[in-house]
Image 1 (cartoon, rainbow, N blue to C red):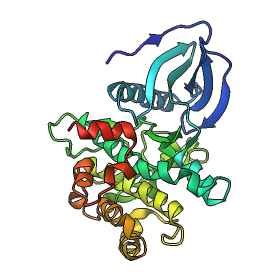
Image 2 (cartoon, rainbow, N blue to C red; image 1 turned 120 degrees about the vertical axis):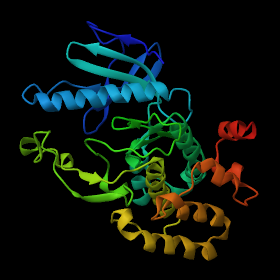
Image 3 (tube, helix red, strand yellow; image 1 turned 90 degrees about the vertical axis):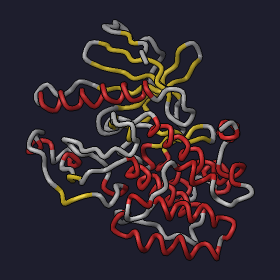
Amino acid sequence: MDLPHIDNCEEFPYGVRTYISAGRFATVWQCTRQKEVVACKLFANSYDALPDCAKYFGELRRNEVNIMGKLRGQRHIVHIIETICIRRDFFIIMTPLAEFDLQKLLSLIRDGTKERDDYRESLLKAFGCLSSALDYIHEQKIRHKDIKPQNILYSKSSCYFADFGISQEFEDHSNLLITRSERPQYTDRYCPPETLKPTVYSSIPTFSLLPRYPWLAMEESFARDARSDVFSLGCTFYEILAILEPEIFPTQNESYRECITKIKDSLKAAVSREPSLTSLLEFCSKMLSQDRIKRPHPLLTELKSMHSSDLFEKYFCHDCRLDISKL
């Protein structure tokens, strides 16, 4: 899908920028144009002294734009509007402008800044809506590869997948095609068990960057497939459950792949304490299976098989329920 692009722009065509947050490669700003409030992701070109890194980060930027363009139209994935190039800076304009990322929201609820009950309904709906969105991503033959609360945005009671910089396309007709990456990247805490010991990639000048960017020392992975995303989303769902039911689920500080048995035991034990969540707890437990073949995929198929009278009302937003009813 062709995206609107403004090249060699003299001035930024949106209103005054307000700083929102910073990530590994870019900063996010709030901007306005004709009363429309949007998010602006700025990739500043600041790697002149490190040409290998400048090339690498440029590839990530182009990949993110390409992936987001192919995922336009799914309501729980951030929507790219256009891209803009001003001198050496590159901007991605997108919606919605998030109130928080999910990690920040869960933290605010945990420390009492936000009331848990104010967000319970919308967080429960994230289970169905994000599952449906992940199915859509895989149907487009794309793997996200870095699903975690920080890469899920929260805006107006809805959650959205974001940050597709290291996402990867696959060409096989099966959305379970096994893929490898020349420079494997992911967040250790949420990555699936299909991993090996850490290794440093000599093609990146890590000797100069590691003090500032320790994440460049990545772990090398076994071949992974779309169900690896399912595991990472399962970890995210567990963190939501730990916030919604703190008396039942312990806060998890380890890498999830290192304590799968303990987490699955806590999910199993929670069934007797919170029977209304039985189907959801069993669903999350399957997502966190050690063996990737046992993880549910597509997720929507598994959800629809759950025996819950209020499944769609509780775990999906109104628009997603309408879409599912047409299937």
